[in-house]
Every structure is written in structure tokens, then in C-alpha cells.
Amino acid sequence: PHAHHGGGAEPTPAEPTAGTGAPPPYTAFSERLPVPRVLRPVSSLGDTDVYELPMQHAKAEFFPGRPAPVLTFGGQFIGPTIRAKAGRRVKVRYVNRLDRAATVHLHGGHVPPGSDGFPMDLIEPGASRVFDYPNRQQGATLWYHDHTCAKEAEHVYRGLAGFYLIEGRDEAALRLPRGAYDVPIMIRDARFDENGGMIFEPSPLPTTLHVNGRQKPYFPVDARKYRFRVLNATLHRNIELYLGGLDMVQIASDGGLLPEPLPRKKILIVPGERVEIVVDFSAQAIGSKLVLTDVCDGADEPVMRFDVARRAFDPSRVPGRLRELPALPAATVERDVKLSFSPSGEEFAINDKTFDPNRVDTRIVEGTTEIWRVTNTDPAETPFGPVNHTFHMHLVPFRVLDRNGEPPLPGENGLKDTVLVRPGETVRVQATFSGYKGRYLYHCHLQEHSDIGMMAQMEIV
Ligand code: C2O
Ligand code: CU
Image (cartoon, rainbow, N blue to C red):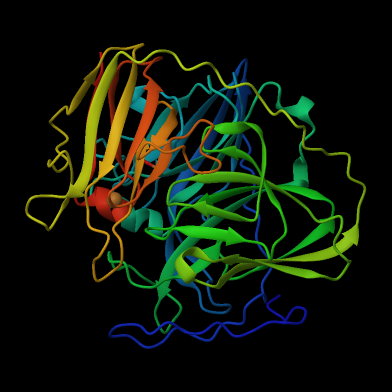
């Protein structure tokens, strides 16, 4: 199963590791991209599908023949995909079979506060909890992941993450690529020891990318259109995708379909963000191999390779209009949200305060529309390069109004829940806080930052 595949494979250069041996050698494009299995409901009653999903210890082979311990949903790195439909309720019983407490947050989900995975409200080992996901929201690519206070970065890094896809009500009529041609791609990163195990170091050291749990995999494709749902689930790496100059047609962002498709040659995706693209391989010769590369900030690291394997009939299309976005209601409240090192310089903070689960930082009247001016005041020059933050809000999607007064970046004109804020930037976002009352979080999605303070609480009243 790990045989050398095709031509053009190059050994991956080993990263130097501090205090441990170099990771085992690895041949790029020698393993096939796994597509995470779709979870089946244990029951379906009326308008509800019920799932059961254990959190459990397992082994993953980032290096063939060298199983290494990981934390998983359902025994696999990465977890199974839940496919939901807008308007149809999902309940998931999460069973904690780990040796530690954990919880689960549905990133991008419009869910009641008791099902949001509050970081102090943990599922103890041996216990289980049912979370309620009403799916009264637009179709979109969501993901579920651990949200344990101060442990989230490590838990997610070690594997506690999976996809949750909501199909919109009118989506089938658009005839976008479906079924086997609709493929989720979770880009993650890690540092590996000499046994191929994961080293967790909360610091911005260089990492190796892996996709759906494999390093630099290949993926045999038909010569036709595919829909790829790309998630950057790395701890702290911005990724800029480049497919050798081929168009990647962006059709959706975090909160679902864009108003219209946007052909792009390079796509920046920051931690926590999702981008959906359609790639058309029909003009490629059978046998050709296209490498998807990360070219962010001068990087040139292969992410995966598409091997065009055969001709295929293609009934799919990408319509010129994908959906109408709701009109922006007038905002009645404006707030400033400052992301920065804390005054101590050893933690990260929001408005100079580190996370306190007993403190409500922001009170919002249910149903109101607000504009938040989110500013990154951290320096552009540090020994590790610029300190970026990615601002994420629970419960509701937002719209990006502008960046330092300039128009948003390409692909940022749809519904978003996670947005890059570079040093010195002020990004204005607008959200309407409707549907539920209760406490929810907002935070930086560089989980190493939120774990040491860059997280705050809003209460919707
Ligand atoms: Cu994906 Cu509060 O996080
Ligand atoms: Cu941050």
C-alpha cells in the first residue's frame, strides 16, 4: 500500500528538530489521500438524525509502518465527516473514552449555548454528552474540534477534529460537483520525532504539512470538475495555495456560498478558515500530475498532488450566480476589540485582558446588529516574523466590511466566521446576534494564542 507511485516524487527534506533525532525519511506523493468516512446516524426520528461519536486514543501512521499515538474522534485521524442538511436537526452523543477531560465545539455552528462546547464545561473520561445542532443556518463547511480550556491547541493538534458539512436547501439545484466529486481537505501541520510521533511545542517553529492525516499524498482524479472544501486546521501557519497556475474557482467561504464564483490563482487560507473551490481537470492530459503547493511568504512546500487518471462524464457546473447575500441591516452598536500581547508580554489578550471564564466581556442585546473594529496592535517584526491573529466569533457569522479602510481581501465578501488580522491592521466586521441568548466566545483562532489568554466572552441577553 505504500509503494512508490508515479514519477516526480522527491524525498521530503527533514526539518531539524531540537533535542530529538530527525524524523524518518518520507517519500512525497507515495500515499493516497484518505477521504474521511461519512458518519452514519444511529437513528433517524422525524426531523432529527442522531449520531454517536466516541473520543478515543488511536494510532496514526504519518510515516508508513510507524504507528504513533493520537487523539481521535471515532478512531481515525482525522475524524469522520458528519453530513447534515439545513433545517434538519442533528444530535451527537460524544462519548469520552480518553484519559482526560475534553469537549467539542462546532465551529461555524448556530447552536444553543449548552451545545457550544464551553471550555470549562468538560466531558469527563467515561462520561458522555448529547449536543444539539439545529442546522437552522445556511449550507456551509463547518468543523468540529476540541475546545478544552488551555489544552485546545494540543488536543486539536493531536487529532481531535473533523468535518461537519451542511447542505443548503437550494444547493442541489445549482448542480455543483457532488458525491465522490465533493472532497473535504483538512490541512494540518506537525513536527515529528525520530519515531514518526508528533512533537507538541507551542511555538512558531517550522512544521510539516499533512492533509487528511497523510504527508504530501497523491489523489487520483477524473478529468472533470471537483469541489474541494479546504480547511486550514494548522496551529499557526497561514497557507497560500497555488496549483501551478491553474484556476481554482472559489465558490464559498466559512459561512457558505459566495454571491458569485471567483477564479483565483493563489488563495490565502488562515488557521480556522475554510475555502471551497471548484477545480476543473477536464483540459488536463490523462496521466498529468498537478502539485498543489503552499507558497505563503516565500514558502514552496508541496501540499498534495492531483493525478489525472481517466476521462469522465461531467454533469456538474458552476453557475454565474451562487446565492444572494442578505442585505446588511444598519448597525446600532460599535465596539473596539484589540488583539495584542498582554501587558505582561507573556500572554495574549483581548482589550488587555486574558480569558476569565467568570467574566463577561461583552453584553449584547439579542437581535441587534453590531460593528466590531478588530485591531492587531502587535509588532510586524519579531524573531518569529509578524504576529498575525485570526479573529473568530462563535454563534453567528459576520461580514467583513473593510481592512484599514480598504476593501476586504478577495473571497472575503461572503459570510465569514474567522478572519485574518495582520499587525497594524484594523478589520471591521458586522454581525447580527440573533437566535439564542447565553454565553459564547470570541477569540484568536491561533489556538496557541487563545490557550494563553486571547479569548473573551460575550453574553447575549
Ligand atoms: Cu474553531 Cu472557538 O473555535
Ligand atoms: Cu493570535
